[in-house]
Length: 240
Image (cartoon, rainbow, N blue to C red; front, side, top):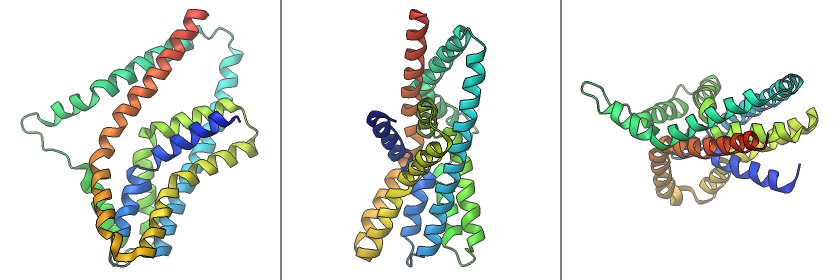
């Protein structure tokens, strides 16, 4: 795997590290009066481990699907399908937030509060009845809610699949990707333990900002992925 691909994977992992499950919930845990390091570590271990398991499964499955498609011979139909998907994603990224805002403004439609979900989950994680079973449950719920919409993660799966690594190499790269995803949360834990109450206010501001921007970030990611897919398909069809 060349340095450019590795740098791209690192960048995608850092984008993924700012999601609800990988950073917003950990930040809310760090704002608790008493930080339970073992519970925090268990949460991140479940999140990172689940993403690694899903990633390895997707890469191996995508590799098998790629070999099957190549055996079919003519790939023109697949390129047209890629072009359509790219255009749809580009359109969704360009106007998706406006359509969602219009939908929420309809008469009689109660506005959703996506940030409340993070607050509810955080309360379960730091509450008096927060056992390790609760930690694992919340971590899995956060990952399951997000994994299908985490386009940087899916783009990284595509890059790793294209690298055509052996199984051991695939496992190693995906595990490293998952580690980078949770690295900012681990760094913030170290800062919180070292500086204690002095960083509580900055962490609270960071958590509030992330909760505001998390929803909107998916749209520009959709647009970028759609543009890349459409451009690649158009190029292939034009030279095919």
